[in-house]
Image (tube, rainbow, N blue to C red; front, side):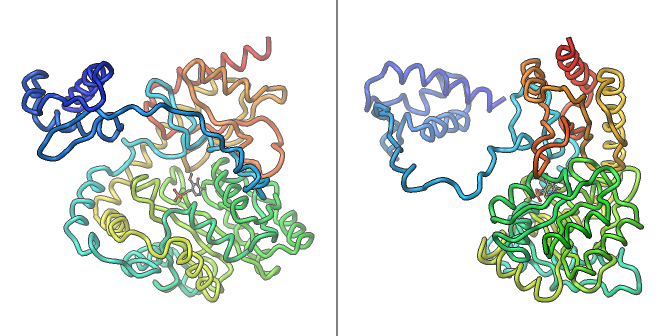
Amino acid sequence: MSNDSSSRIVAELREWIATAPPGAKLPSTRALVAQHGASPVTVQKALRTLTSQGVVESRPGVGTFVRAVRVARPNDYGWQTAALGAPQHRIRQLSTALRTAPNDAMALHAGYPDRELLPERLVRAAFARAARSEAAVSRPPAAGLPELQAWFVTELGTATPVDVAPPAPSDAVIVPGIQSGLSTAFRALVGAGRPLLVESPTYWGAILAAAQTGVQLVPVPSGIRGPDPDELARAFQRTGARAFYAQPNFANPTGAQWSPALGEEVLEVVRRHGAFLIEDDSAHDFGIDTDPAPLATRDGSGHVVYLRSLTKSVSPAVRIAGIIARGPARERILVDAHAESMYISGVLQAVALDVVTQPAWRTHLRNLHHQLAARRDLLVAALREHVPDAHLEAVPQGGLNLWVRLPDATDLPRLVRDCEAAGVIIAPGDEWFPAEPTGPHLRINYAGPNPGAFPDGARIIGEALAKQAQ
Ligand SMILES: Cc1ncc(COP(=O)(O)O)c(C=O)c1O
């Protein structure tokens, strides 16, 4: 209500300002309160908005005045072309998964769960507590709050078999999200110009982090059942790579969960080649029909470097992840993370820890799994009904996405454009391929807003696809 009135006052004052000379004094707050029938708080908010937009300036004790409008001259940045030269690694434009959708569009492209799937009450209470705590005014240790390090490690440790030594709290390094952790891991464990094996398709952000860090990606075919260990072994042999980035549980985009036998085989190949498995467990909290089974629980000798995030399951505003690594690798990771950001806001760490240690967190996760199951099944049914030509190799047992293969002749960019024109935003699968895509795919997220509209969204995709066959 007060937001709306404040926007209305802003709009009306902007009209007044448009015809007022520079330096003109705005009516007093009291006069504006009377004129607009709004509270002083709402009027002050409108004035702050106008100040931040640069159209007025406030002189304390004197009043608020119209600022002189500067005539915008086009700048010539041509000199920068010579100064910067050609980029060493072309980093793609903002990924589709990060696009902000217009309010009236149906967002099937996003990578983050909708607000109704977040533990909002727990998060708000945790922020209120953190604001009153030491965390609000102190610098945490470089590796992270010890209690949060211990939490990440305990989560892994409780699933670790008795014959494997569990990690110690000091093996965890807190980072501001897995995305940042990937750049750190790639720099610290691989290095610019050196090869890194990755599944294909794989998470677009890993492709981005490799481009940023100058690591050379070597794609290994993967799919709903994970990679072929023989293919992986050949890639290690051929390239001399010493690391493999993979998502054994509910992979983005395929939703794949590796069988325990495949996990063992991959670990064996990794060990044989004296290599690291960089295990991205970002979907750990999104198991639907099965629980995640991190490979890190089966490794006591430092081959697996494990990344787990709370950004998606706690709140996108709490960008917190943990990297668990042992031995010198852990030191390299800590040094890189330290050079990158020195330390991570203690407030965010305290909030994350507070949320995940509340008894209500477990209840939230149980409810979340039911909601994800219902959303996934609704979208699968809608696609089967309205997009019969889309091939879903398997219904994922966890994660947030469906990965569908479209007919070979599909003009993917046109499909994405046509859907968007009809109000549905979808993500073209090409962004998940480290090399040329092996076919036209879509990654469709079932955790976004308004699941009731999934059938409509599927119908629109189906119609846009059918139009191409005509
Ligand atoms: C597989 C995977 N890894 C990492 C991330 C990024 O995680 P964070 O938000 O913790 O940076 C994502 C986000 O989409 C993801 O899908």
